Length: 206
Image 1 (cartoon, rainbow, N blue to C red):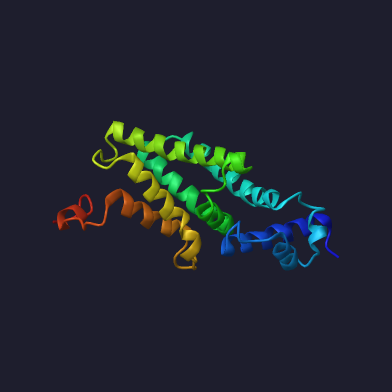
Image 2 (tube, helix red, strand yellow):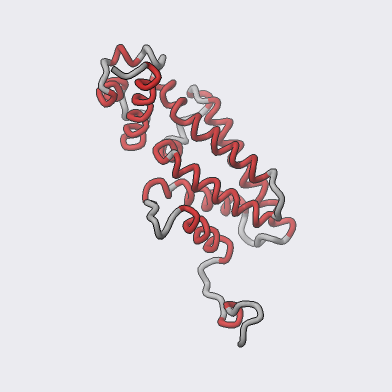
């Protein structure tokens, strides 16, 4: 028989799978209990409500994400280097918590403080502030282009990162570090191919 702490982990794992697939509103406590192999009444020995389960699934993901962001923002380097750091931190955290990422992306509209998720709303604001603050810094210093509003840059960067939880499957030849490099290269340099002269390595023969 699994220990109580193990049973709690099973509940969280199965609930995360259901929430990601069916949505928070579309998942019942009974479904979570069935998936975890326990009676519905037994689930309440571990969690007071479905909302408590949602909060537990998301809090680990969001806490880790914010800690990684704080580390990047407090590091040395210019705005471009730190922005790449946010990309890497995001992709690695998404990889560690793919189901929580999907839940956060799919149900963000209902995970507000007034609906009983103050930590989720607070974290969403902190995540946004990290990106927006760094993008604005980069615009002010001339590191980033000034003709595209930050309010457009931010959601494009954010959603592209979060949605990797749905489609990206790392392999031995192409992992998260390579994805981070390519993601960064596309957003920082754009899709337009450089001229042959621009592509030439410094010091190479023309």
